[in-house]
Length: 121
Image 1: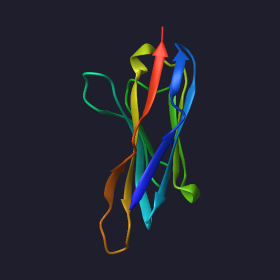
Image 2 (image 1 turned 60 degrees about the vertical axis):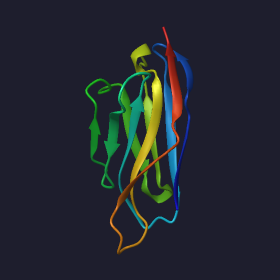
Image 3 (image 1 turned 180 degrees about the horizontal axis):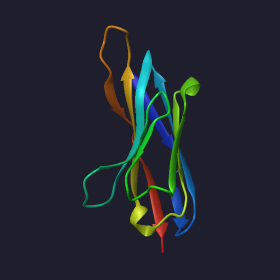
Image 4 (image 1 turned 90 degrees about the vertical axis):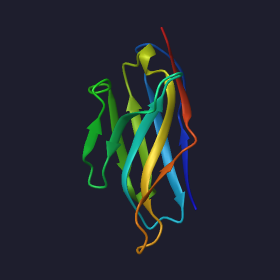
């Protein structure tokens, strides 16, 4: 069993900053890509940022230059530093990790429960 636990969401004014954290725990043999996704009311879930084990990153165009994703492989934790927040960033943010629970089993994607980020204008 694998659990992803997010923290760090909240209410912030436009222009402010928040830092999200996501820690993976449980029966983990290895983790490949980790990332953050978000879903605003009435919209589909969308990619925010991803990071590989080696540190290669990918960002949605809407957050480039404002958000930074980093990970601590030793702690199986991924972080999302969000600066210059806009009301359009308001959404539930979900952590995702590509986890291998045993060497003979393929990686599978796991999701956290989500954390609410609300940016007021």
